[in-house]
Image 1: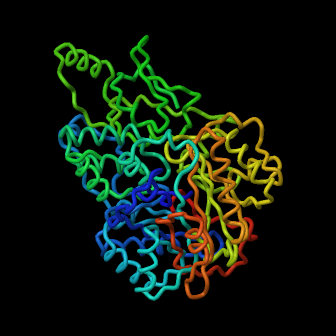
Image 2: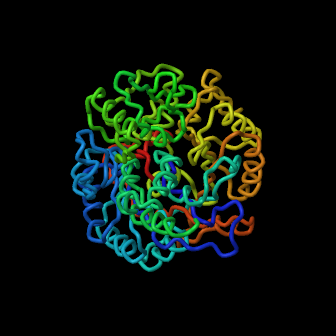
Length: 234
Length: 284
């Protein structure tokens, strides 16, 4: 599906501000193969892709069949309520790849994303690679890396019963899991907990990340949004 | 999905987790329950929550004690303490809900996971959308509202009248009884899903008219539509679609860019083009 296409920002507000704030901390690079065309040695290619990404400080890595660097656990005990292990585990993502899937790396700045794309190009893996980001930044990356764009897909935002959508801050958080696994009431709860100082924005962002079943949730951006929500009326 | 009343301790953690708001505490029994008509079988509650496997009687006793003294219990918000969520065996047509809502389940008709669309993410090896063409992804129910197939059919029937071409390798198209008229199987029209994507292809010149039509149709449905449109760039990476969208007043800020790094490496004959199955396991 179009999981990373419709990430909400002011640009997609029903009543758009005159100068929407650019999104400078949300860049996704993902790789896909097509059965029968370029899926030979696929596991090695996907692992190579993610290992390259690790050099550039990704804020999340994802395997679409298993999840991201933070995943739910089936074996917690009550100590988790006081001492929860919130450390991301990129190796679990990389080593867990078993075959056909889609893999993604999420970055919170342009420079890391651009450097990664340059590395991926040099690696010549032969699988399809896409950037999901503001279009002007993706275009800039292609020009700086010497890659002519092959195809483009634009998000044109939302229409229909937009009156049923939650507020902008909640949408910014929930649309970072385009499959809709992160519910609006839960995002609102996390915002409220940040305001009430019941958990740190870091812990809350990582809690939300566990619901994204393909690992494209931007933990760093979520932390920023929760931090801002704590002190601003957003 | 159902909640085991023997295990549930009515902690309420699963209520906000449900994307459809289908879980509630039934005051008559003081247990969480699921509104089956609203549940889209996305498995978010079951798979997204961590589990502790605690003894329900013990947890209830602790909760009653804390409640008596008005202590605020502040547990981790994403844990089901007693593993009370139980997946159910789904039969037709309800199984459609999970196929369109749980991104980790492949769609049976196409073998594709998630909402099961490739769009232009693998266009560098499939050449699905060619130069001069536009691919539309019309996603119903996203973000976080959900959609019933009767709403989707209302739009597909109208789009069919425009003469558009529905993508054959698409889960919604596979559920049409007559793609030329946009008719969807009648027994699933009341089924609710987290989201479903209709894919159509036109010439670039038709983009303004199709977008206008979709916007008009969106006023007739009870859900939200997320709209995306794509094309293949020219040899130098030039993009005629961007100019059209700008001219039509769309602020197409965000999107995906296929870098063209894929290449056909298979030594065997590939499957027929209409059967190509990219690994759209939900990402992209």
